Image 1 (cartoon, rainbow over the protein chains, first blue to last red):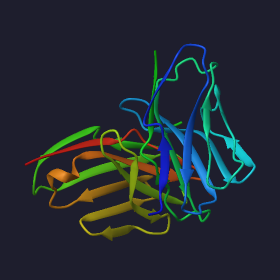
Image 2 (tube, one colour):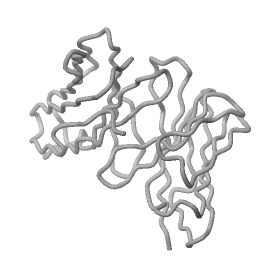
Image 3 (cartoon, chains in turn orange, green):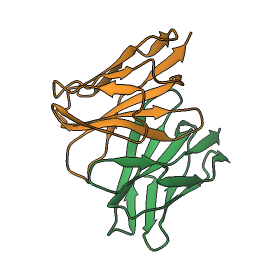
Length: 113
Length: 110
């Protein structure tokens, strides 16, 4: 089955640590996205990538970093510079045509110890 | 910045009733999309309506788009308990990024 896999489902971070969230897709999609969702809120775009080895900042990129070395993978690192990292993180992918929807993984919930 | 704002924030109905959610957006869009999210899960795409379309149907879903008022509505007919979820609208302004609203929480009671 084709889809998007995010891991781990739950992640705990100590103060001052960097953590990396994994996102893998086997849908052969060119574009991939990372969103942050806070309780009772909509999704806010962190970073996105439309092609391998290229990515752009979204609305709330500060304190986060990404890489896109392979088409299938778009890992997100939450750095110690992100002062309020506790949130639900969602990864998505889509084909490049504008009139196609995004496909989402099941998210990673990050908490600070 | 939030592109879409859903109304109401929360909606509680009985099974068999219709549920209507509204979305307003701020800037011009290429298309508007509706997604559903069950608690603790990712989003699932429901329906996409292009800026040159006024109405679209998919099963029990009906979406309308009024670009002059920058608004859209999602109607779910004959609601079921399994429809309980949060519903988000999202506008595509450029060609690649969506801007999401805060969502409507729908509770359908048996």
